[in-house]
Length: 562
Image (cartoon, rainbow, N blue to C red; front, side, top):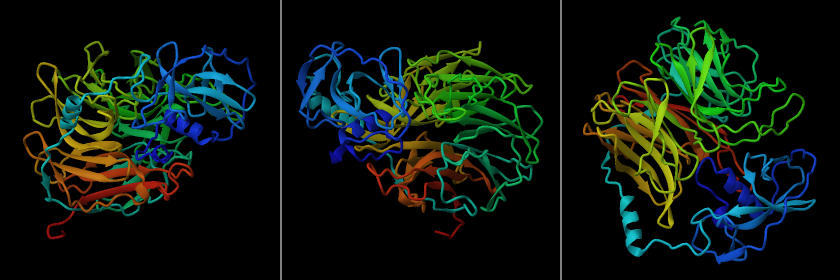
């Protein structure tokens, strides 16, 4: 049982949490239940196949997988009803408070009995054929990285006044918000605070203060992502927010700390207001998508959720599935025009998004990660008509979750390449790492491994810039255990890995969520800004991230400061 109770990445998948909770005999958080309806009909007695004790993930207690009529392998777990809110769906499934739909086999007054599907190797009935010794060898060889090591730079803290506690997630942006010539940090509200966005004013010397004088409209705030752009062309940077469960917001700035709501046309749920569009996001980018000179908002859906909002009490609603990508076109008058190419559950959902030009046609493209295991259609090429074509990258790791992506032209060919942080199950083992995909002139992609580890570790954020002022793109990665990795560009399209950066892991293994590089002090070299968050789980990880998280900044140590 110990093997599945501890997960070394920041966002344990809700399905795995649910399965583990069932195995441990625990219930979900206390929530009020709706009226009970008729029980689903029981299925015929299923066939069985033996379990593989070496396989990761939840396993059937009796060592036998059941096989349903679709050929899917599962065992039956039970979930306590006491104190749990859930939503019965028309297709017979039940949606839990974690936003996960479960297939109920039967139920009684105390429990749901539901299918826990085989996480790896499920498929047609029968014992799945594992890879041969030769195939395993090829898989292992594909996870070899030849990145040279270096010790060229050391960084020191640039964080005085930034918070060292609180769940600062999921994202932020950097801009001069008050016109004093110094860059500031624009962050969404820390999780569980329900405040307006927080702006930390910088002085260019590593000192920060919260802009307490800023004035915001009264809105339903929560945590999520923040991105900055001048939406009305007045020279003052405005703010877009992707708010967990609720949707999107846009705030227009007067440059003096005053903000007004300009969110007409954005998907946003107002509790009790009758608007339940359902689309919400915790990752967004601001970019001129249609080339009209006005910055637009590109947002990736955050996936299935149970909406716990209401006027008087929390309540479930089915209208909270946020799949696919939505572009909100800036109309220049404080309103937005929504454009999407599908937001059904067949589409991808992700907590990472990057904008670039992958085919060199001078139009904006975007790439997402994937919280759906094994998806490879991550790149989306912009068209002249404002739509986009989704293309596969065939060499994305088999069975991978892609937790971070970053677009950057590494080899100077005029096409952005794609850096990707993955966690994949292949060859009977978990692998984690960073791959670089070089965009080729013929539309194909060439993969090169930057980091490859045989373990489960989330590469949770990626960002690029120029740390040492040599004009070559450098890369920074954050992990789900709070580490910060630095890679210096070698001028040939690849990197060396710095092994003595001076940046410690975040205390308590708080997970990295977002990282950006910008020249904060005006010396021509970029600084690093990163946020971290997490919380303990009495059952899964009681000692993790006691502070809740924080925000950190670092810059290059002065000469002789090593």
